[in-house]
Length: 260
Image (cartoon, rainbow, N blue to C red; front, side, top):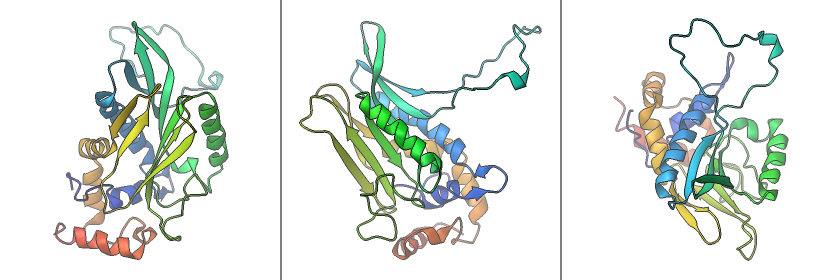
């Protein structure tokens, strides 16, 4: 399954990523999150006007030292209390006259810990409001169909009518707009991932091909091979029951012509 047989989100990979692991918490979400955020920044950069730049921020930088047998500094591990956060989001900044400016828009890939019933939901909501209050617009990508949307006004999949498993929320707080809005782009398992309009400065916009970023992430990683090994002949796997019965039937119809 190196090539995603689905036109949008691969439901097998997506369910497995949300499956709890007794040893390490969430099975593969951390690795996927880090990989996807980097690719999102790469794809988004191609769509930005020339005076904007996109960074995958809050990353731990790894450095390989050569010909340095003597450490420059040595610390006891117990003395180190705080560590930088790993790659967490994409941040768009204005770039003019050789200078990188303040954040314009942030793009968050939601993690299971950001959503109810996890306790970090309330911390995320507080940080979310701080970002918006600072004048930075926010796009939130939610592939997590097994937990409730972060806004209570959005119908919960698959219990409520007119619900969808996946969402992208774009909150535009620019002063140039007549009102601050939250635009919700919802899509299903048998639908393409939408192009998402990302607000920039003034009347500037960038059209973000999120589907391309997802496809590149799946193709570059080992996700397809992992699913091949786990599925085998069992198409009902990785919390398959978390999908709506109609979606389960569609998933099976797609896979029966592919698996041996």
